[in-house]
Picture 1 (tube, rainbow, N blue to C red):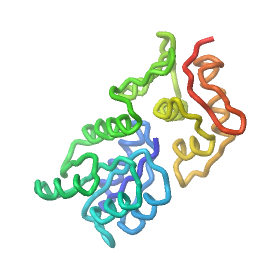
Picture 2 (tube, rainbow, N blue to C red; picture 1 turned 30 degrees about the horizontal axis):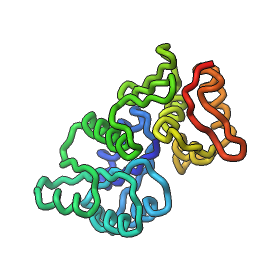
Picture 3 (cartoon, helix red, strand yellow; picture 1 turned 180 degrees about the vertical axis):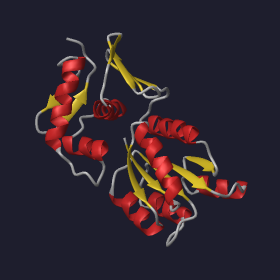
Length: 221
């Protein structure tokens, strides 16, 4: 799942980005408000983690612009200030959650996963599609009750399709959520990962719709 992390403290941004990556997210980063507003306006993110105290454009202004433009991705606000009035202002501006600094990175990861799940209409940490179960907290998957060993890229792809179940997803969109903006969008690599997943899960677990993309069915042979 592709996340935009907007934080001007380079040390904190590095720590959070590292933790998000280890948790299976693909992270795009921005250190100033103007660039962050543009990225969130033109790119599709599963989640934005947004600091309020930013140079060039503050976080609340960015959030209000996104919501006014119809951008609906979940936004988790970060701030060094714990004033309840600022929390209320952020939520009223369209934030989905709020964390005051300093915070435990583990809690941020848990909240990030929950926001992404809820945005996709899932109530629990386990996504179920047919005979397939994806445990987003443990980053594991099983099909027909059989645990399956996955590489990081295989898990990322399966997790993304699990959140987008019942929808055919193009290879280009999958590539964005696998690699982010900086690494290009290699649709041939997506096909290779899908092929590996079919070997592990079964040939019918992921269906190809010619000219359209992929649909997760979770079916066993």
